[in-house]
Image (cartoon, rainbow, N blue to C red; front, side, top):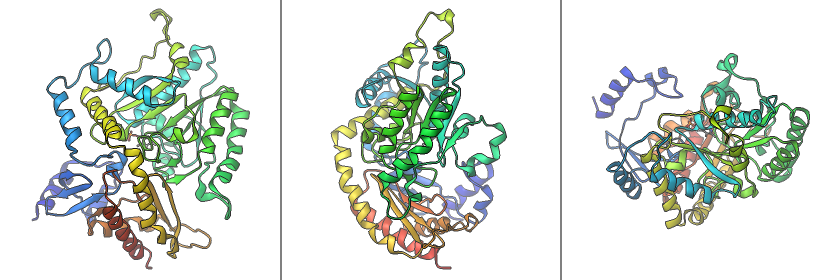
Length: 450
Ligand SMILES: *Cc1c(COP(=O)(O)O)cnc(C)c1O
């Protein structure tokens, strides 16, 4: 038995994997990874794979990055963890200073959680609690976009709208107001992204006009609905939304957990709309994919509504055990240093242009309905019928065929249904992008043959 098989057998005897029908592994191999280096993942049988999806969108500077490794090692010898209530430490203070300095001006406070879903829970609770503290307890509902994703814990799932993950648990979830997404895949032929996103805002305007007295906040994934199939929209929607939230007295929550730290081409997606949300949720690439950490930034108006004598019971009594973990903070500080040192946002412009060029012929494929890109995220949508955009029945699992082809060709291209995408670490080279494009092309040929 190969080493890969040995590890797989031991794994399958004791593990239950995330987002997986475990029975699939009767026919699909599980890949045990021995080590990573840069964009590469190496298994035990001498195979390697380009991590084209950044290990679920977290990695940005490659695996085993020497700079980040060293910073974590240095921190490890000083302090691995300490309670963040009543105590503090330099990495969390320095990181918070940097985050406040680099995010839009009114954001001045950092509240930490230890994963993205928990961070969404923080933002939802803080928003509701703010309105309670200012004497508006009736503001307790949330507006969300169709096809959105905000995580898997119950409140995060409730404000999301990907039915594959949500519908089973519907009886457990709070009721939310769902507004049609500005998703530009759905635009009329001949209409541009901006016009479509503007047009779709009418639904949001109406929902706010009708419900604002009961609504605490609107929550959105700015510019890219990642888990919902990498669907994208124009920044004008965020501008209109900010203006309307102000007009109606409703908070705006930006879930930049997936898109923050350069994925959309700018450091944060909100930069492209030149606005500031009331809550900015960050995680994933915050630690360059090293350690679980999330942060919810907010402004002084929110903060002051909680600041009072203890016995008024207005404080935000929310906590997670690993809040502000020093090792994770050290990884995040190293990450931010690399952004500056290597002028990453500027250098990514050339890489994202190369991604576009390497895939420009895909749109001519008879089963590709759309090739879309925002910054460092490029997605290819396979359909059964291109003329009327009939999707493939999900049961056919066409994307998995691309995945299996890619695994045999040094690439890990894990799809979202029939959407094949690249969201690579920023240390990828143009040649490696070309390789991903050619493997994706062959995979799409195979997957759409019958
Ligand atoms: C991944 C993700 C989350 C959830 O983060 P976890 O750390 O997986 O809980 C929330 N929102 C968005 C947009 C995400 O992509």
